[in-house]
Amino acid sequence: MSFVSVQHLQKSYTGTPVFSDINCEIAKGEFVTLLGPSGCGKSTLLRCIAGLTSVDSGKILLDGQDIVPLSPQKRQIGMVFQSYALFPNMTVEQNVAFGLRMQKVNADESHKRVQDVLQLVELKELAGRYPHQMSGGQCQRVALARSLVTRPRLLLLDEPLSALDARIRKHLREQIRQIQRELGLTTIFVTHDQEEALTMSDRIFLMNQGKIVQSGDAETLYTAPVDVFAAGFIGNYNLLDADKASQLLQRPIKGRIAIRPEAIELSRSGELDALVRSHSLLGNVIRYRIEARGVELVVDVLNRSADDLHPDGQRLALSIDPSALCEVA
Image 1: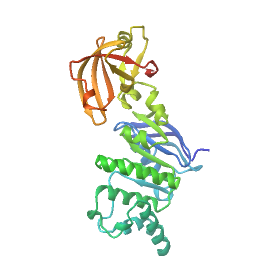
Image 2: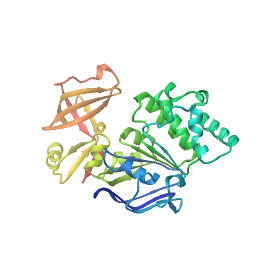
Image 3: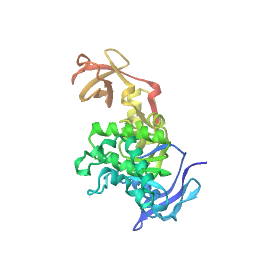
Image 4: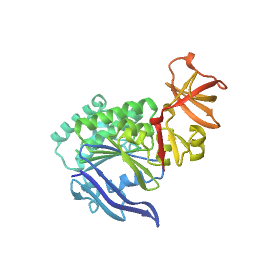
């Protein structure tokens, strides 16, 4: 039996549908990511589960109980937002303990639970500081601790890392995943960042225009996109219509083809003559724009050495792994 079950959920604003007939199942202890572009409905779906936004129809079952009629306070759900929403006049310890005060937990129990969760998020040494004395990453960990201390049945994370710089984001997403695994806490995470989704999730629900267009683990979504949107949103695929694909591969192709940029190999000799149009350094990867048989392709190559760099205008050979060709609707 699923721990979270969303059934035929619908939501509109002033007659304009945000999503319709959303259905999904989430197992206990699973880390699921809602991934998609801005405006696809992922944050609204999260707020509906939290009870912060009403639904027009449908059910949301949490451990078998329909929570749609319940107020947010009675759902036993923790939520972390993009903005920290900390009380500026309270210390870290007081901010984290606030939810326990609302639950009327006694002082001794509250103190113990606050200390335990501050230890978990590595903030015990900063318990006496105020939000203005802390970095963005530290404040977001306070917000996470505040949600965890109430021992929620379900944790919801609404783009909590988007306001942080890249180094802190990477560290914090690793920390969130580690804590989630330690606690076995069922978690739904919202992001538009494909790297976050691919590295953190047990499963990903890819959303577009109010619908879940594909769901599965990271490998499935990356290697087997179901349509052009999925291929374009995850992995920087080369998307070729039937004519371009036939022209490149020199055989009849009936539908659209997606080719991963790292599945194309550049060498001094090979199947196809190719011309380097341009290149970009992306840290450990060099991204080339290559023209072969009148078709432009993106090719990603590991940046092993400066000696391996192919300058613009150089002629090379190109080969494509046949198993990397993916037909998309």
